Each structure stands twice: as C-alpha cells, then as structure tokens.
Image (cartoon, rainbow, N blue to C red; front, side, top):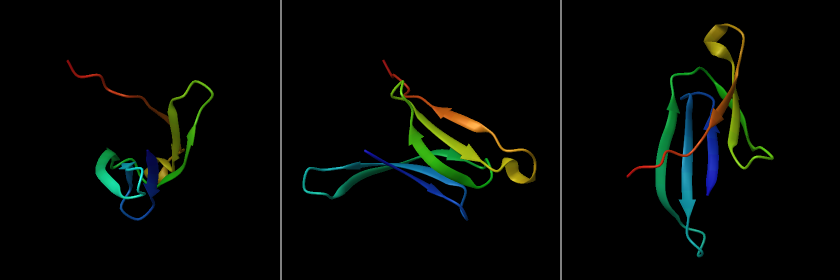
Length: 69
C-alpha cells in the first residue's frame, strides 16, 4: 500500500501495489480539506496526514480503515 497526498488537487490517494510493482487499485479517501501534506504511519499502525486548513489553522487527520460487513 502507498499513500500519496496531492497539494493542488487536495486529495489523499491510497494505492495498492502488486508484488510486481504495479498499482492495482487507486482509492481517493480524503477530498476538499485544503492542501494535504506528509502522510505518515503512526506507532499505532494508522495513517496520519496534515492539511493546511483551507486558509485557516491546519489539522492533523487520522485515517483509519473502514470495515464493511
């Protein structure tokens, strides 16, 4: 899995990569939060990313998996 933050289009993409190094799926998981920066995995295994707040104070966002039945 690879997390990619885009500044201009303000999206967080989660890419799944095959063992051959080919991206197999691309999910857009965060939109319209302003510019996104620095996706990092925390010690708890979850993904954290900062935004610029769209012109206000930025925030640290926690990205956690959604379990579907």
